[in-house]
Image (tube, rainbow over all chains, first blue to last red; front, top):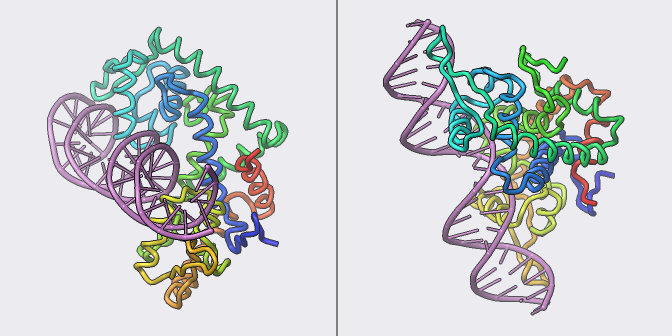
Length: 147
Length: 147
DNA sequence: TATTGTTATACTCTATAACTATA
DNA sequence: TATAGTTATAGAGTATAACAATA
């Protein structure tokens, strides 16, 4: 009862945050390792996907979709722009905004990291059981959703 | 299809790590807010619980149970010792080890933060549905377990 | 006045590696 | 040689707040 390697977890036993932290860190470091030195970190992977999937997306839209603050997104995007993975173009009609597009070099990297992403997905699927995946995501979404 | 606030998520749509990061951050910041300035952060909450539940636990055992490296645990424990929440006593028979115990002041704080922990648990339960909680934890454990 | 994006700054949590002391 | 714990250092990811340009 309430044991883990002979250590009692007490109220931690059903503390979701306790497991969430460890699962996040493990998934994150596993994916980092798979990505290796492919000039992209997990956080920038998310941004690259969003730009690939939504050509012309603005930075505030990226922030909202990625769940990150604009200050950090700005830095990440500039880094990706310096690496020639994306380009940012002023939006006609609202000159405050920048529209982001993936470049040819970005597409090449995207193809590679997407493959690595699929490997990572498969590893996680194997861990939780492919049939449980949809429910897992559904549960995580419920934790995330703003109310 | 693959939409979130009109932004297409593409391969992120079923990328567990993507949701895991956001769920972790939200749970973490929510709990931080509930704890307030009660001289304890979520990470130290975990350590305090482990010491409360396992009087005399050594630091390597804490590391293993909490899933953290000893370098950070050392710093956290010293801080908690400075705050008079715990005390560390050399283990008779193996003078390399320290046994940690919760102090009277630690117990008082523990009672308060445990109550806050229960509030937090209830909030998460409401989000995912109390009946889904066991499965959620089970799934998270599968992501964590070493193989 | 509000919004987009930038910048400077700093915080939190965490790990790596070299170290001491003990075993 | 190996383990328990300490320390210095650094890294990743993130946010807050003040700002300029534009709406």
